[in-house]
Length: 67
Length: 171
Image (cartoon, rainbow over all chains, first blue to last red; front, side, top):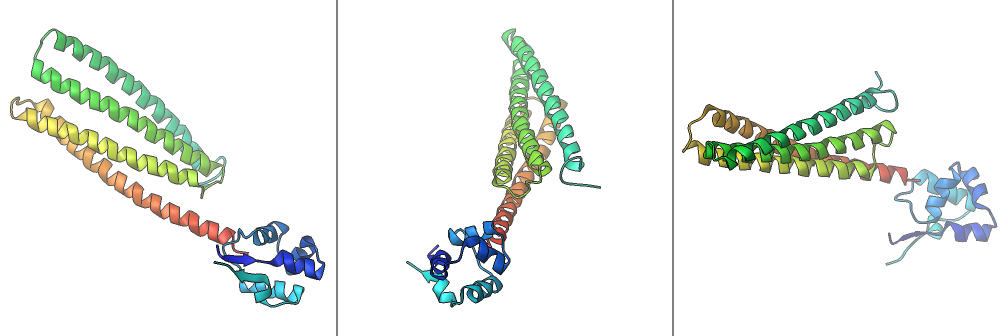
């Protein structure tokens, strides 16, 4: 899929661990791992909203498009 | 009543299918014995035309028996997956595909008997051949419809798995 999830980049910028983020946004670490490894087929707006809220960023900072 | 999972209806169906597997195996062996007897009659040149028809009929019956064994085996595999609560897995799609192809194969086998019976019925007027013709046409149609039906079910199942995967991977 050409949509790339850059959550790990934002996590590094905010110096936050994956487990911490998963706990704050209320998803399991396994699901966050699926998201980080670009295996996810879709992302709910509610999840995206929470990630943006916790990482203090915009959806464009997390999602990228590559041909 | 529990339909899926352990100690449910599907686990009892497996027992039934295993019995069916054994019964079909025994019947196929009996047909094999009948075939060997008919070959003996043909060797002695007794009632040649009828015996040749009988031989071809029983050979096709034996082939369809073997195909039916494959179908039952695939059904056992599907029901085992249902028992282990592994309902939407790709193995079931493969099994359903094999079952539908085998149904078509059985339909083709019976269409061969139908053609053979029509050819021979002109020369030999025997009630047995009339029965065989009637029974073969019925089975041919049943297996053709079953094959098409299972093929459609297979496609629906495939779509269901796609939707399930999409749902599972939606975060």
